[in-house]
Length: 287
Image (cartoon, rainbow, N blue to C red):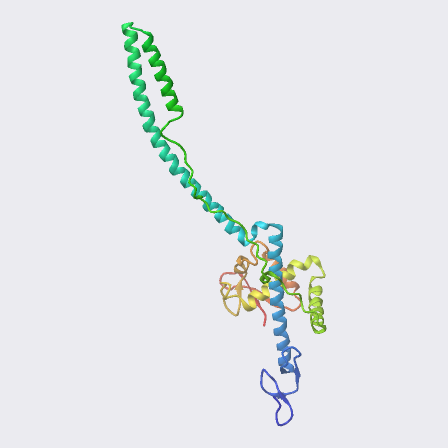
């Protein structure tokens, strides 16, 4: 907004000063607040790069290990549930069979004992005739058949499946498509600037890990400490050990990596010191 003197007011401080217009948001800023505005844009770019790198990491993990796909967990759960149902049914059926088999074998044993007594009496009295021998022989054959293949029990299968079949439905919906990036001159200029930043920071492959760490630390300490479950101590400091326990850092970075990140960071984005009480190292994002 222009004043009576012809000067334009700064969007941030609302004071009539010499201003410059931001080509992106089209707002006017004085020199001081233009610098702040550009720094905020740089911080937002840092956030985008962090999220991009985290997504690339997740994408690489899923590419190298398809088992990490989130839907695999549903398939694994279906498999486990199906196995549990089958095991439970098998246990019940076996129990029924065992109980019946026990009763059946007891009945066969009673018949066998009766036959044994008849044979023993025949031998003691020396009263052996062909009719008895034939009858006992046939009875033994019948008992053996009843033992091997009981006539009063069979295995039946229900027509209703115990486990519902699972399948993967691949949808052809446009919701799964990804739009092509805009390729206007203005967009190409912006992307050239972004590429310059990326190429500058990743030109040395050996420093890639530290660059990634710097971006992740900047995002966490500036914007996500409370949201991510960490706790500020004082003056904006957070215990380094708590940072290293965060899912973004655990098993990926060490205290030595953080030391190197702080020491080699040209923009001096981070402060590192020891807690006066516990002696533990703490870190914060510099203002």
